Length: 212
Image 1 (cartoon, rainbow, N blue to C red):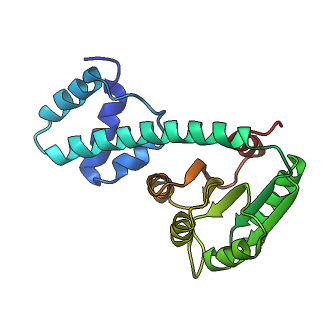
Image 2: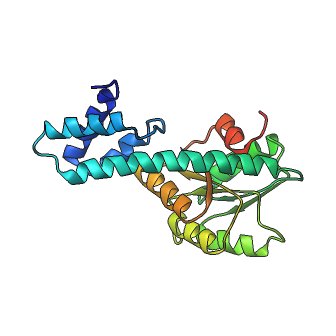
Image 3: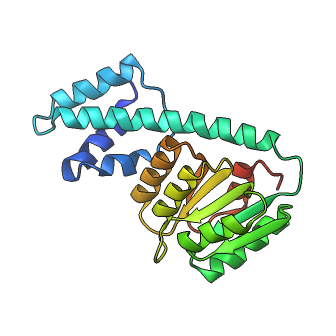
């Protein structure tokens, strides 16, 4: 068995207690290619544990494949976004927390962003977008908000065919953040990154392709 076994064991044990925690566990792992050797390792491990079903193998492999696909999409989106930065940058921050507004505004301005717009939930975010003369270059969105939450707002962005860079934040469940990012990418949004709060200045600069 290859060296992949150590973290495959962790995935399978997590899955025994709650099938969907495998996605959460995978969120802390790097994107890895699904090779024949990796598939053989997982199959061998699952064969040795009678309580695990074929569903577990399928869900683990699909989660790994989605992570690899998302990594490729993010790399491509970041490259395209960086090439497009020829004028003043505009960013929309959608978050119900006033302190987050203040901190993110200060960070963005210090990184050279020209305009920072804010909204307190998805509904007001849609209104701000409609009032802007042109879509913002980047959109930073919290997932947990009252009224219209981040998931609903991402759906609005997808329907509006928003093509700017999307950065997702959450102060809560990392599983929800991971799923939201996967859904957003599958809906055609250019998700540059998803982060637990508080977002660090260096991480923000990196995903936006800015010097810091």
